[in-house]
Length: 467
View 1 (cartoon, one colour):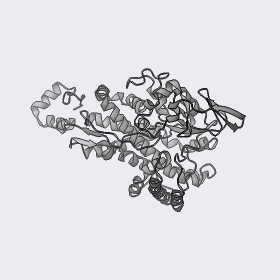
View 2 (spheres, rainbow, N blue to C red):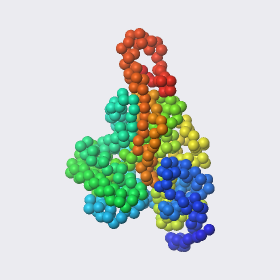
View 3 (cartoon, helix red, strand yellow):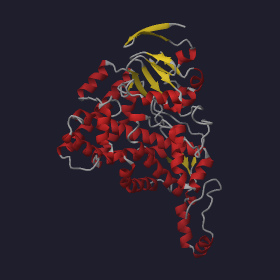
View 4 (cartoon, rainbow, N blue to C red):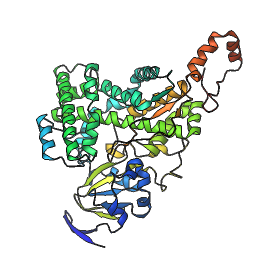
């Protein structure tokens, strides 16, 4: 087996370059990984859990305990490359971004200690569960409003008509961005994902650079208005006020980077997570029926969906010194792709990991939101949105089905996963609200309903609807 030498803080060490053809051929942009990262890494989890990918120039980490160890030690494994472009930009694309004044720097995602935790402590209050409760009523109203637009149609693409829109609307309101500015920001968020975690061609990079530049410019214009009058409500206003009080801890450059980064994080990850959850639950009809019968199961079902089909499938770190991961020597400067989706299906931690089980006792130990000091700060917002959306669907459209034989397409990148469309269908005549209305208007049916309360079975295949 060939060796290479790397000079690090501990001197010269030797580490093995891949001799296994599977490691040499691994490419996260190939179809298997794009469709199902955990399945694509099944062989590696068992045979070569930490390996060097020459095509990616990263060390890939696939087992639960190894992923946990990397997440836990954010000093040895720095998050500083988390937002680094995976595919280097050609000079023309860089010039386009410079023209827009693009200056993405450190955010909570990619900053080292002690800066990271010092800032996080100042800015995390709004993300605490007890402080999110005040948002629940208007989020539910928003969900019902979107459902009202298609509930009587009998067929819908849930991504295009709802799941893509709600997380962005929630994120913008949470930040305090006025509605009139929301439309511009919605157009460009996907570009940032492709720009950072994708493999666009040189020609595509030029258009992506234009979109990212426009996104940056629009976000900065909105931020300038906020800074001029920081009395508004929302997390960005909170952050501006913290900047005014603690400019050394929350500098202006941080505000400008976070304005863009948090929109992408809040929008893409929650939209994909919700889409994946619905596809998974509707493909496992008994689980869907169970949460319809007992909506109290929704929180545990969400955790199992996040484990089995999470939207954040991989993240990145860089070794700050020569070290070991899973018994493999990683040189200082070695880049790591830590694949949470693979860890979430590791049989060493999850019993029968390929089975979807909403009663699983340890589903919440998934790594979809990361782990340790850098665990996703917005995880509770995502959970709240998913819980409310599921709750409204199991009550208002318990009888929906996936449209058969539909194909699923994914945005090609290493780290975020979710289909770009999700078609469902149902029989509008079986909508619980319609049946409820019919019962109330018919004295004979109303008397029968009062005697035999308890719901009904929709089309013989749905679940109990409350009337």
